[in-house]
Image (cartoon, rainbow, N blue to C red; front, side, top):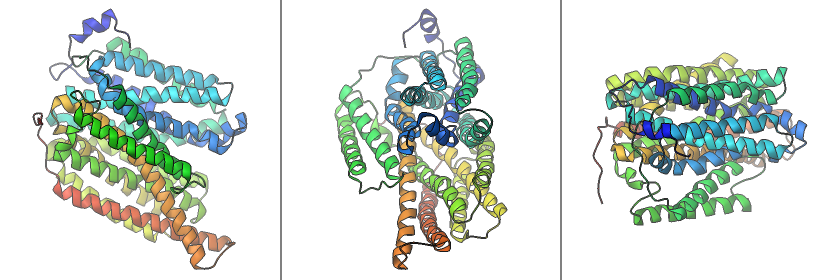
Length: 490
């Protein structure tokens, strides 16, 4: 992140609402799109990678778990980066790292090199996402932020929605390496476009980096993300000694991290953001919705293939329209938020979410495919009505000097809640499935008995999601439209 002459000259310029922020946002959105697309594009290709490199499923999963782990551990330090370095420096660094990681992954001769490339991509992604949101908060007036954040929602939901589809098409007709060759020109174009048009939007400072806080945050968030991710895979559970150890270290480190922030004059993550009630409400709502959404996105495909007896292709098709609808509706929800505020979106959105998750309890074997597609589409529409308004309204209440910290905390806890949701709902499903077999004295289930057990376990998981959705309804009733406040001093 070395400072160049061009950066020094640009540091005095600001792309505020007085200028035209569209080129700036276009650059950042393009970078965020390719970074988020990369999160899900490997999911369909894992079997092919296992075959090529001769590695086990527990090893190849690090391409996904490691990516999430790096993002979860580095996003907390993004607030420091955004104060220390210019917008231009951060974007060029992030996209350069992502591009380099893409090249390394595409040409990797062994699995270890592929993993290094993948983790390098994740470092770029961890810088890019908070940078995008922080820039929007800085350059877009509060009365127009909903529309801008809606575009972020489109990118965040559209990219992972098409990721598995694109991956399936490429892997079906080419090798898995073409996934990276497909991403590379998009990444390069975004990098070159940014180098040409990007300017800086805020002044930099030289805050002191507290190394102990950084290490505690890495152990805390990293331990929690890895622990919950590991608990949701294979035969591992929360009782597994390794999983329990990671979670214990994570929570203790996070507690020490929070305590230390209260003692420091310059905090790595300024936890005073939790003093702003709309930010706290929005954050809790987002975490609950992320966990509920993960229940549907993880449990539902397993249930569709194992109990509803849909093919893998059919299961993928069922999930696609909802993701596309969510991305398409996010900008519209943003404009409605700017005009009417959060409550007209959040209250009906949370009610729809609770109702549609409740209907999954009656999604039983023999149900037509089109009903499941409609359910998924309505679910993702409800998510669009909740996520962007809750996030934007919460961040709007923060004073400008807390934007980097609020953005970092919100994005970090979204990653953490995703990992928690994945592990929690898979665990509930498997526990319910085993409980059904034990209660009925079934040791070696037949086909119909296995379907009945999976159905019971999945319904238990859907019920858990329903209770979480009900909690979001209660929180939505407490939300009020935010106005930017001044810093609350100790």
